Structures are given as structure tokens and as C-alpha cells.
Image 1 (tube, one colour):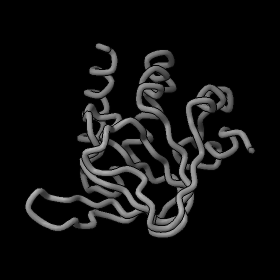
Image 2 (image 1 turned 90 degrees about the vertical axis):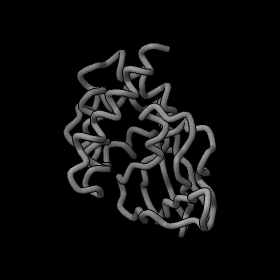
Image 3 (image 1 turned 90 degrees about the horizontal axis):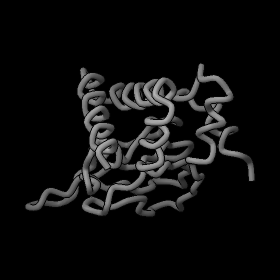
Length: 160
């Protein structure tokens, strides 16, 4: 099995980060594959992991209490990040994610990511900014809002 560093090096999120810093991230990420029509995580499930899409298509859905599930977006680009609830201070995922086709992802446990950010503030801050940029490209004018949520998540993680 190839090391995670080889996967991370090819993602736009990690472009321009020195190899030594990416090597520090290597043990935090785990590679996973999902068959078509698999639940990656479900709405209201404990929010533990942040995911980075490598290959495939992921549908992000939301189920309001009084209606059927609706598809919010479909992710198809390598490097797309999802599972934000895990790093913005939510205890549960606020939406579900399902594989539309076979999907490859890497995921990181939120507590491990926050531990890395606290121990490596310069690299951690750079990575969080990249994560925020990745999602904000899908939501107009949201980079600042996403960054504020990440800062809130970091503050809450620091208190633990």
C-alpha cells in the first residue's frame, strides 16, 4: 500500500507545502474506498472525520424533519473536502454523504487534525486556509465564513 504522502502530494490542497510538512500529516490520513450507493456518513451521526475526495462522485444530502431528503451538491473533483461538521464544532453531521459511483477518499480524524494544528501552527493554519478555500469555491462569498467556523472549531478543540 502506498504511503498517504504520495496521495496528499497530488492534491491541490497540499500544493506548495514542503514535503517535510506533508510527511508530518502522513500518519493522520487514512485511504478508503466506497462502492456505489454507499453511505459515507449519515446526517445526525457523530461528526468525527473530515474527508477529501480523491476519485468518484459524492452526493451531499440534507433531510429536513418535515420532508424528503434533498441533494445539496455533488462533489466530483479530486481535492473536494466534505464532512465539515467534524471541524467546525458540530457534534453531529448536519447532512449525509453517499457515493454515487465508486469513491476513493482520504479522511482525517478531527481531533488528530486539531492536535496537528495546535502543534504546528504555521503549517496547520495554512492547511485550514486551504480547506476553507476548497469549500468556499462552491459557496459564493463564503471563505471568510468558513474560516470563522474553523477558527471557532480550533478554539473549542483547544479547550478540550
